[in-house]
Amino acid sequence: MRGRGGFIGANVTPASAALNSAASGVWTVREAEAMRRAGTWPRAPIFGFGASLQLWLDASDASTLYDSTSGGALVAADGAVARWEDKSGNARHAKQATSDSRPQRKVGVFNGLDILRFDGSDDFLDSTDFLDLTSGQQITIVAAVKSAVTGVIQTIVSKYGKSSFSISSTADGWMWRLLDSNKVDFSGGTDEGGGVSRRLSDNTVSASGLTVLTVKAAAGSLSGATLYRNSSTIASSATASNAETLEDTSYAVTVGALRYTFNHTSGKYLQFFNGDIAEIIVYNSALSDADRNNVESYLMSKWGIT
Image (cartoon, one colour):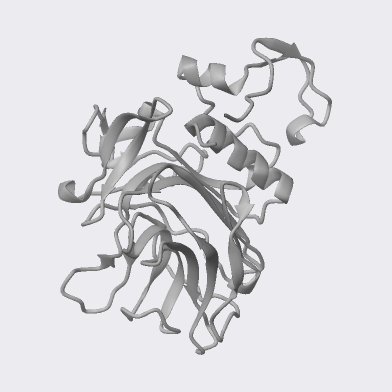
C-alpha cells in the first residue's frame, strides 16, 4: 500500500507565493485519506498548476451526477447518469440526452468509492468543443479506468470527427483508446494529407483492476506524445509515416466513444468503452514530470491503486 503522507488537521502558514498566489493567513491541511473517509474530496485542485485545468470529472463525487442534462435530481445507486458535472470550474459538463446511452452510477466499487459503468454497446457522454491539438496546443489527460473486456477496441476519451469512418487525413481530431491488443493508443488525423499520427504503448493494460493512464502531448504533434501507466512510461516511438501537426475539429470532447460522421448504419459513434471510469482530469499544458506525478499519485492513493 502506498504511504499516505501529510498531516491531519495541521495548521500551516503559507508562503507569500504559495500556489501562484499572494495568499496570507492560516491554511488548514487535511491528509488525503482522512478527507476521503469524510467524503470531502476537494472541488478545486490542490496542485500549483491548476490554471491549466480544463476538465475534471470525478465519479466519486455524488453531487456531480444528475439524471437530466439540465440538472434535475442527483442519481441514486445503479441509476443512469445524464449529466456528469465538470469540477474544473469551466462548466464543460459531460452529457447524454438519450436515456438508453447513459452510463450507470455504481457505488463503492473501488476503495469504497463510486464509479461510472459504461456498457460497451452505446454508452457515452459529450462534453464541449475544446482542446484542439493544433499547432502549439499542449495536453495532459490523466484517467482512472478499468476495462471489463480484452481484445476489443474501445475509446476512453476522444475529440474526433469529419467525413470518414477510417482513421485517415480526412478525419480530424484525436482519440485515446485501448486497442484489441489491449495496448494504449493515442492517435489523430493530420493536416498534411499523409495519414495518421500515432503513439502506441509498448505494454498491454490488464482488465483485472483499476489503472491510472496518462497521455501527455506537446506542440500539437503526436510525435512528442508520451503514454504512462500508474506513473511509469509505456510509450513507443510514433509508428505512422506522418507525425506532423494535428488537424482541428469542431466536435465536442467525448467520454467513452469515438465520434464520426461517415454514412454508417451504426450511427455517429463507435468503439464504445466497456468498463468503469472513475475519474478524468484534463490540462491544456504538458505537465512537468513532477506535476504529472502529483496528479497520478493523487488518483492512485484515492482509488487504492498500488
